[in-house]
Length: 376
Image (cartoon, rainbow, N blue to C red):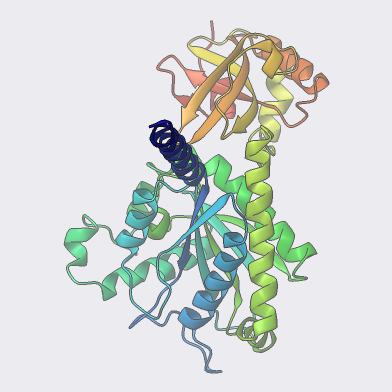
């Protein structure tokens, strides 16, 4: 009888331990950083035409698979592919895959092309600030829509040739642009320092593949396959490995910054035109219907807005956008006061903090526009 009782106890203990292990395993999987890797083009859409026989769809897929394989070696990452073979995937479904996965990042891999011997890498984030060159890239990437059945119905009247349609794409993704820029800069920096490539910089363009992706998203033009030298580099295994590793290191670094509650300052966030800077001294300090705050961090961690979490700073507020939490110091309509708060934040170690502005509806507005707005 005693033996039977002991066996029952052992069974219950083992069952309990097993259930805890399964729960811990499930929880660990849920805590993984999800990256959706999108190999551009595929199937009956080969991508950019070249005279040297290189196919964008093949090179993009090889780089995507190499990138995914490297990330999958890390326990805290989960990788999802929009395609792993030579198949055609609609632009709309690429975004749908990312949203269904509740991804933390969407990374689309492409190759560039031009009638000249242009060369170099470019990383795009969604935005309406299109130069003529950026509009050309956006139009070329978006025109894959015409290869889809019933594209008029699926894309709600979107016309790749229309500037109005291009601008409309930015609206829903706008809240993720800042973090997209952080990642894009890291990618381009790594192309220079680690892959030893020429960088043509970080760009903004209205690209449909990033429309409706509810997470930070980038589209990477890994180089020009129409360039004789660069095309050969991208078509080689060694070149593909270098490019994939540069992107991988950028993604890992990006995640580390989020986990450590650290962010890079956003390019252009605080830059004002010369006229505004020169006239600031003549502007009133109080701005009607405008609230200024100092953004000190953005993180994947949900922290209590208490001084012990922010190096002694009080009056901390936070805003959740997707999976990210933005943290702010102070709240005032006095621009002079918020600049003092920014200096205080910097003295505490938040060296990349910057001023943001909100209207009376609680919507973020451009700092420059806020400073030009009506005042008391």
